[in-house]
Each structure stands twice: as structure tokens, then as C-alpha cells.
Amino acid sequence: MISLVRAELRKYFTTRLSWSMPLAMAVLGGLFAALQGLFLAVIGEFPGPDGSMIVPSEMFGEDVVARLVYTGGVQIGYLLALVLGILSMSGEFRHKTITATLLAAPRRGRLIAAKLASVAVIVAVNAVAFTLGSVVGGGLTLALGDVSLFPDLAGLLATFARMILVLVLWGLMGFGLGVLITNQVVALFVGVGVTLLVEPLLGFGLTFVERLADASKFFPSQASTSALDLFAGVDPGMAQSLGGAPDALSWGWGTLVLLGYAAFMAALGWLLTSRRDVA
Amino acid sequence: MTTPPAPSPSGTGISVRGLTKTFGSFTAVDDLSFEVAPARVTGFLGPNGAGKTTTLRMLLGLVRPTSGEALIGGRRYADLSAPMVTVGAALEATGFHPGRSGRNHLRVLAASHGIPDRRVDELLELVGIPAAARKKAGGYSMGMRQRLGLAAALLGDPDVLLLDEPANGLDPEGIRWMRGFMRHLAQEQGKTVLVSSHLLGEVEQTVEDVVIIANGRMARQGTIDELRGEPAVLVRVADPAGLAGVLQEAGLEVQPEDGGLRVSGADGARIGEAAHAAGHAVHELRPLRTDLERLFLELTESPEHRNRNLATGTEAA
Ligand SMILES: Nc1ncnc2c1ncn2[C@@H]1O[C@H](COP(=O)(O)OP(=O)(O)O)[C@@H](O)[C@H]1O
Ligand SMILES: [Mg+2]
View (tube, rainbow over the protein chains, first blue to last red):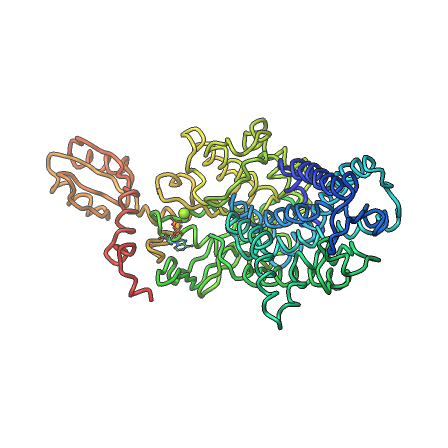
């Protein structure tokens, strides 16, 4: 089992993806964090719900601002994590390496378990690159806006840990999707499409259906925001004006919901995979 | 990982029993049964589309049989604890990641079985691509891919080798090398080799046993010598009828053929001497080779095997 995980890690580290992806992660994380910092720290004021101007660092405290800035790119981060997860399986079908892989690991349940473990490790490494990029990009704008860089170091470290966890969970969801849909192009299209388009539209649509209005907080993106626990210590009304969901899940529940999605898709994929002919 | 290659008389054989695979209403492999003897080279032959690759894929647990079973050393491939140490397979249409070097491809496989990387370099040396394998696989020729596939199959030093059309894409020199290599594996290392081909001539000099299939069904199995039949000699004289009498009296089987006589049961020397003793001047005396290629065509194109790929599929359903 350990040797299968090692083989999967070798697969990743012997292609270009092993350096291009962390690079993209760091650069995009930095850019989006810097952008967030531009609004929250450098410009440093925006109109609140009642029309009066809000100065974030005064209103919520510098720790919340730092948290929001450093996690400014989390959406792009988990999208890339999703892609990494998808590629783990669909890439095997695309390049027809699945035959060699299954000859080395004919018990498909074990192969899936080894791949799950390797995706977790690989995405975690990438998530660290993403976090480092975010700290550099966000830190730059925070400094420019004269907001303290690490107002609450322990709290920020917890946020970073949660961000890495969220990315890993998205990687696992992507893996499940890649097992379900072996066509790489379709899997990528569905994964990114659902996240960027279907989920927000559906969430918006549901606000009109009274009995389901609450359901959108269980959607992956919303659950991710909850899992990051960005708005700890912020008045819920204020949190909404910053993009938080009304009545959001607690961070623990958010994490569990994401874990549930990942487990569900991987299990379904495993079920299908164990019967599928590889010809 | 370093199982001694000492040929064991027991060895690891293959047994296929009542194996059937249908894709929708199409029966690709149809109630196929055969045994592959340990430490011998067996040719698995049949025209394109006969079901060879599908059968091998079922042996390897890649394709799920509709019914029947395919066992290696009495066990299913997926039940082998370290499969690559027992069975090495080089299948058609095995892909390589275009951005990964062949060497790294092998190192990935090696890692899955705890095989040291040193072995990867040894094998690349053995199949003759030590330098080229450091380049990305995207640019490999068919011959390179075949050699890399063979190296992958040999990685675990397995007892059994399944090679699917290994000569495809090789140049004549490569084909000769492959033949010698297979013989070496079976005779000196005691490995069981099952090699598929759609050309009998390609493996004729290499294989000891043959399993010939057509349209997913068994057409003929046995040793290559059985397939060739009894050796015969063609002899031409001025008076064939006279010589026929003499040879028949000597207990040989004689048939008129092509203006001369086809004699089986004796070699040219004996026949020549018999003719000389009886006063016949021999005009021509040559061994007749069974035209295996023609026999192969006859076997695989016989009426009960024809037309399957054109059939409506009602029979299979
Ligand atoms: N996955 C599949 N789906 C449908 N038909 C298939 C599949 N795989 C093979 N076949 C068909 O089964 C037959 C046998 O194919 P194959 O085993 O590749 O033959 P061979 O290797 O002897 O050339 C062919 O007619 C082929 O088209
Ligand atoms: Mg074939």
C-alpha cells in the first residue's frame, strides 16, 4: 500500500505539472491576495449596507482584515486543487497509462486508496505554495495600507491550516469526479463549470424557493467559506456585506460537508471503477 | 524481488477455461479453453480482431469475463500478491505519458513493487534503449515503445510473460532480436511465454506450442510440430508409378503430387537410395515444407469461422 502511494507520488513528480502547478498556485494566490489587500487595506474604505463608509481595519479589527486578505485567492486555489484531483485519474485514461497502472495495482480499491492519499499529499504541497504566495502578495498590500501584517499570528496560522485543508478537500472532490468521469476534458469542464457557474446560479435561484433557501450553504463553495471561518468575531450582518452567507455553517460543519462530497464521489467512483473494463 | 531464475520443472502455467466475453451483442471471445505449459513459448495466433488482446486483458484482470475463468498458476491476476513478480505483460496500446521519460515510467512501476531503481537501468540496457529512455516518451517511435513495454514486463523478473504482438512496429533487425530474446527467456530462464501475433510466420521459428483462434473461438491447438505434420519429401523420376510400387513395398506412404511423388515416413537419403537400388534415375529430390501460412489461413478462414465481423450479431445475443 505504501509502495503504491510512493508510485503515485513519483508519477506526479516526474512531469512538468510538479513545478508548473505550485508556481501557478503561488503566483495566483499572491495576485488575488494582493487584489483583496488593495480594496481592504490600500483603498481601505467602502460603503456599508446603510450607505455610510466603512473602514475595514477599524470596523472589524486588523486580524479580520489580514485573514480576508491572505485568503483572498482561495477560490482560485481550490479550483486548481480540483483540477489536480481530476488529473490524477483522468490523466491515466487520457494517456492510456491506466493499463500499466492496473497491471502494477490490479486491486482497484487499493489503487483508489493510494491515489486518494497521494492527491492529499500533492494538493497539500501545492496548498503550501499557494499560501506562501498569498502571504507575499497580501503582505505587500497590507504593508502598503499600513495595516499590521500578522496581528494575531496564532489565529492566522489556524486560518492558513484551514485553507490548506479546504484545498486538500477540493483535491479529493476533484479526484472523485475524475474517477466518475474518465474523459479528462469533460471532467474538467464539469468540475470548473459547476463551481463557477452552476453553483452560484443554483444558489441564487434557491433564494426564491422559501423551503430550500437554506440549502445553498451546503454547496461546496459556501461550505468552503464556512470551513475557513473567516468571519469569526464579526457581526453576521457585517459578514454578509463582506460576502459571507447568511446563517452560514460553522467551520467544523463546513469541513464535514466538503469531506462528505469527497467521500461520496470517491465511493461512487470506486464502485464504478471496480467493474469497468479497461480495453 | 530477486527470485532466482532457475527453471523449475513445475513452473507457472496458464489455464483458460470456458472464457467468454461479449461487448453488447458482439461476442469477442467465445467459450475459449486452453492451457499454456510452463517454461515453453506458446504462440497465441489469430487474424486481427480474433480476440487475442481481449483474452490477454481478461487474463490480466483488465477486462471482466462474461463467463469462464482465466488463471495464472491457478490464481486470478488480481489475487497475486506481487503481480509483476509473477507475471510480466506488454500489451498493445499501452500508453506512456508524453511528458514523462521512459526511464521515469519504469521507475514509477518499480516503486509500486519496491523494485530498486538499479533494476530499471539494467533493463533499459538489456532492451537496448539506455540513452533514449531519458528523453520524454512523447517522441518515441513504435519500436522504442515496444522495447520500453518489454522492459516494463521484465521489471519484476516474472515467471510468466504475456506479450501482445511484440513484433509490431519493429524493424527486421528488431524482430530478429525479439525472437532470440523470447527463446532465451524460455529456454535459459525457464519462463513461460505466451506471445500473440496475427502472423504465424513471425513467430513460427520461436514458438513450441500454438493456440490458434479465429472469431473468438478455438481453431487449433498443439505443438508447432503437430501443426507442421509429418515431414514429407517430393521425388521426381521418369516412371513415378514404378517407383511408387517400390517405396510402398518398403512401407512408406506415397501419394502422387505435381507429376512426382510425395513420400512421407522417410528422409531424402533413404528415398534416393531406394530409387537408385531399383534403377530409377532421380530427377529431383527435395523436402516438402508444410505451408504453415496457408494452413493458418485455411484454419482461420474456414466456413464456421468466417463472417463474424460482418454478422448481424443475432447469433451472439
Ligand atoms: N471494448 C470493446 N468494445 C467493443 N468491442 C470490442 C472491445 N474490445 C474489443 N472489441 C472487439 O472484439 C474483437 C476482438 O478484438 P481484439 O481482442 O482486440 O482482437 P485481436 O487482438 O485478436 O486483434 C474485435 O472485433 C474488436 O472490435
Ligand atoms: Mg490485438
